Every structure is written in structure tokens, then in C-alpha cells.
Image 1 (cartoon, rainbow, N blue to C red):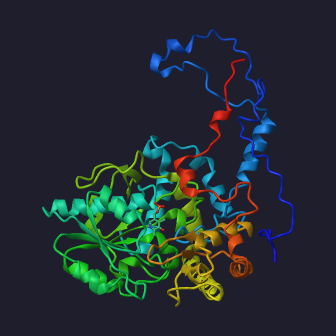
Image 2 (image 1 turned 90 degrees about the horizontal axis):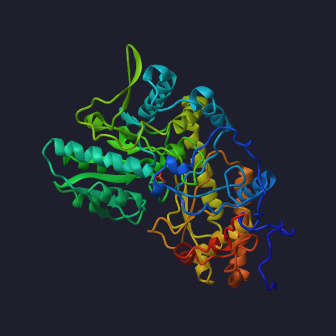
Image 3 (image 1 turned 30 degrees about the horizontal axis):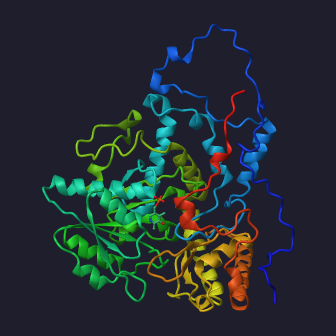
Length: 502
Ligand SMILES: *Cc1c(COP(=O)(O)O)cnc(C)c1O
């Protein structure tokens, strides 16, 4: 019987210098110095007004070039990233970001342009944007596309505003939006920001939208429904066309939260199963480094009836080439400063072109295969509440382990000791002690098998040493945090740096 939780690998922890860069500061240390000014200078006060001027110099650390490089390189090594480890964060589609995308986005013709340049001088960039739009229209089966939204959540908001504008244009005042209770929190939040009211719909015992409950909530005030498909349990909403039909009969629209598009891209077109509008998280399905807060993009695709309301400026192609069109009387206006997060479009376009039609389909096929492989293997050690063929992800639960006093959070923290970024936990809310696992299409069988081994070992530890699992992680510079306190009272050690004028 061990008395402390063992490190999974019997190796000494690497020494980690956890001093802040301020604590490493030495007065007078510099990376490099600019030459002495030999031009007549004027005090800053002659250019700036009083409020813009500091009373005291900023508190900046003073370190050499090598020290600064080491400091940030070592910090970056504490990060989990797709390029360092398997990252099965459910719902987030943390897929491999091909290096080729970065080569494309660094081409000077893309990197060095400015959004205020004349259309004639950026024809290639506009052509690329138009091709991304055409590709998205093709894979979704929805003809109207805007590249404006910077995220999935902003795509939701844009689509809701478009839908609202449509009804206002017809003199209708519809304000209700049906949303299943398994939905991502951004769905009701987007509704609230758009000035609409979310109406929750139940999930049935099969993990799918309860269609009877759904239909009973359709009233003349319903503008649209927001449905995630595949849903957040990783299950395909097989009665989606029935839901769409009921909405359309009522003159309402069906919005699809397309965050899980990775599971069906190239296989099924949402426009074909009754969807009228959807967002695509380019940073999920179409590869984009994400997880640190962006940049991403959440373009939306809509049916022809909603197209006139899309934001401006729009990329259009006519006989003279490409241009950004501002003139669209029914448009909801702008959703952002300029037309799109352009670098994101370049990366996604490189990815789309590399894969082609055949490769696009294979994204979905392999993502689904990988998820089902893990569902069966992980299911030998953990409960899987909706245990049937899933799409690109599945939701396990630590129900069995809870009997021993071990919770999902403990399992997630222990995975860090085994070198993995934990899966999404406690989401969706409809599953107790949820562990949501999404292995994307590029993961090999070897990687998946090793992950299963780690999950099995943790299940074993929960049996034999449950109290000790509550201590995990044991291999990280910082151990278990009180997560609520860490958010409310972050201890960032700022007090340590007192600036002393030299
Ligand atoms: C990621 C996600 C969103 C939000 O997308 P962002 O790009 O993070 O704003 C919405 N719904 C679901 C189901 C998601 O997984």
C-alpha cells in the first residue's frame, strides 16, 4: 500500500524556476540598447495632453535578451498544446493545425496587406475569401455566407440578428427561441444579447431532443430554434428533419449550432435536412490554433430568404473582379471593424484545398471512428450513459468512481500527471459527473491506446487508493488550486515588484 500518490513515470521532476520575470529583474540589465539620439528632441508633454502622461515611469522588468527568451520559452513549455500532447477536449475540436497553414498565412502577399487598401490592390485576398465562402456554401448546402463573425458565439448572435431583421421587415414581432437543455451556454446567451427569449426544450431518455416537448412549445411567437447537431452528447439528432418541418410550418427558422460540424462535414449537408442558418467554427472544423482565446472565426451560412439581411461589407464578384460591397439596404450592418479575420481564412483555405472533396469527407469518417473506438475502450472502465454509436465525441461519467469518493475533477487532474490535457468536464449539464471526450481524426491508434491505458490506470487507482487521487496532479509546478478562489482572488504576485528609480 502506497502512502502518497505515485508519479506515473519514475523520473525526477524537471526543476522549474517559478520566479516571475519581475523577480529576475536586475537594475540596468538590457536586451539591447538603441543608439544615442542625435536628433533634436522635444519633451513628450509637448505632444500629449496631461491625462495621457504618466506621473511615474512604468514598472518594467529589466533582464537580458537571453533571460527574456528563457523566461517565456520555459513558460510556454508549461502549456498543453496539440503539438505536444493528445488534447481530447470535448466540444472544442482541438485538432491538429497543419504547419502548411502557417506557411500559407505568412506569404507576404497575405501577411502584409491592410484592410483599408483599395479593392483593386487586394484582388487575390478577396478571391480567397470568396472561395472560402463558396466552399462553406457547398458543404452546408446554404447559399448565403458571411465571414464577419469572429467566433462561434458571434456567429450565433449574427444569425439571430439576421433572423430578427427578417421578421421585423415583415412586420412580425417574434421573440422566442427554442433551445434544448443540452445546449452550449452561448446559445441562450446569444439570444439574450439579441433581445430574444430562450425557451428550454427537454432532452429525452435517448439523449436526443424530446420532439413532443419541442412541438408543444412551437407558438406563433417562435422566431427560430437553435439545435446543435450532432448534439453535445455526441449523438446525431436523427429526427432533425421532423423538427425542421414543424418549425417551417409555423414560419419559423431552424438554426444549427455547427460547432460539431467536424462529425458530418463532407457527409451530410445541413441545408438538406432542413437547417436555415448555421455557424461554422473555422477554428474547430477547419483547423486554427485555438484555446488561448483566438483568433478564430464563426462564419454563418443562411438560406436564400435570409441572405438580404447578412452584414456588410460583403465580398462580391462581378465582371471587373472582386470588391467589398457596402450597399445592401436590408443588411443588419457591421458585426466587426473590418470584413473578417483574414489570417483565419487563409489557414482554413489552405486546409480545404489540401483535403479536397475526398479529404473533407474523411475528416468526419475518421473522427467518428476514433470516438467510437475510445467509447468502447474507455467504457470498460467508466460509465457511458448513452452507450451507442456516437459521432465525433462521447460523454462518459465517473458515476462508478464516485462510490469511492472520486469525482470527475479528480480524474481530470490525474490525467495531467499522465501527460494529457483533461477532457471537457461537467458538460453537458444533462450528465452527472460528465467527462466529454473528443479524439479528432488525426490521432493514431497508438495514441488512443495509450490514453485508454492512462484512463484504465486511473480507474484502478480510484479502486485501490481513492483518497490519494484527490491530491492529483502531483507532477505540475502548481498543484490543486481552489478554482473558485483562484478566479475570485487571483494571486499573481504583483506586490513583489517595487520599482526603484535608477
Ligand atoms: C465551441 C462551441 C460554441 C461557441 O463557439 P466559440 O467559437 O467558442 O464562440 C458554441 N456551441 C458549441 C456546441 C460549442 O462547442
